[in-house]
Image (cartoon, rainbow, N blue to C red):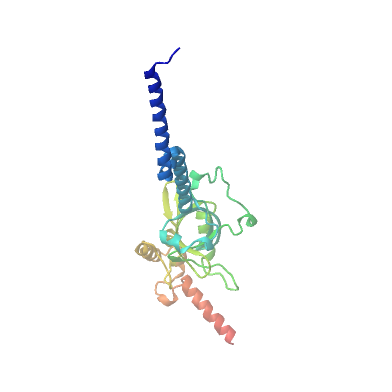
Length: 272
């Protein structure tokens, strides 16, 4: 059977268009290989970009919010400058104005206490806790390094242990001191909702004085701290029971005065 002439012309035209399209595609690929590659693999590039952004965003979020800081040596000046408080669990209280806590970033939301357990025991907690010196106050010191215990040091230690030991706390970091501790303001939760400031409360019960030496920090509550100490003095609560009404400021029985007096006695003893 003979093929009609117009059918042959139509087939030739289709073949010509097909070749022209192939040449156009090849020309585009030669002239713009990167653009062509993106057009050809757009979905792959898009998914890769989304995944990369998600990974980088997760790393950034983890570093800013979920990274755990084991010790005070891991607390950087940048972290302090951010003024972001740390949440943790108090594992020990060594004196009337300092304690150690295990940093638990994210708290309950990231599984701490119900999925992620906090280590116990001295060996497991070694190099895993942050040593904190309470900001704004000075509490009576217990006996150490051959120095006798200061009056009301046992009461201050017992009070602080009763408030903080084995409890969740929130610590606002201010600076690091010469003893590799972090100086910070601490709050604990009362009835699950109210945050109590430990420094302020210790002043109110007469178990600490406002810290006035060089490098002291008070956050934003310096006047509140001074007022709390003044009220405790006037009511003679806690250690202020030991101070006579007409004692001079130089002999007021505060922890700082006691330390200075002890140091003077020690120096005189060694000199003789």
